[in-house]
Image (cartoon, rainbow, N blue to C red):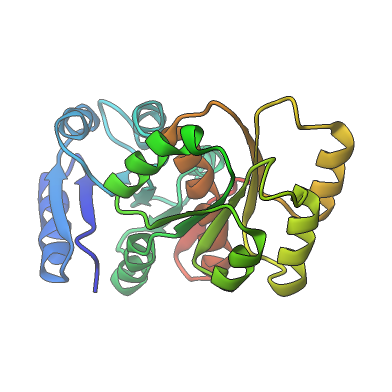
Length: 259
């Protein structure tokens, strides 16, 4: 099941773009084709896509420039490269700047299907924070984008709903009397690698707390007030790292080099 993942395929070889889009549609994805970087940007402004697959070397806008333009529009949107050439500086530059992966043509279509199915699986967002006002608008934006969002204020309940994978936890500075570090330690006792991100209003954060939190493997910190797009980019970055760890070693593919 591909959860209606909407894919934009970009290649200056129109036949290649159209054929790949047709194959993806047959596999249950919703795919459309564009034959230039500028054409792709126009389609992205008019419609919502969940992933972009783009050729790297194109005459008007190359794949890396397209990636940069997409990141300025929708920072969390996954971008996958494909190239008929041996991976060069342009490909590695794009991978450093956030492309999920790069495939060498002819594509390993089964590996591409697997990657897209993984991208169709959205992490659920678990929020432990008493700050209702901060999260109301952010939650609405996340749910409109298909994310499952659970906001709770009781640390005991948090431990009951956590799963080993498929979640990203956001910890606010206030949660029913328990300190953030105490809660983080409890999470790590049960789930050593579950992604956890701190949220702070600036007044509560201290260098000592952050140093201890880094020692407990937090994935980042967001300072209030923040926009839903900022949170989505954090989630997307975590997702890219997870995918890169799984995809390393796959033949004919390079993966994101972002830390």
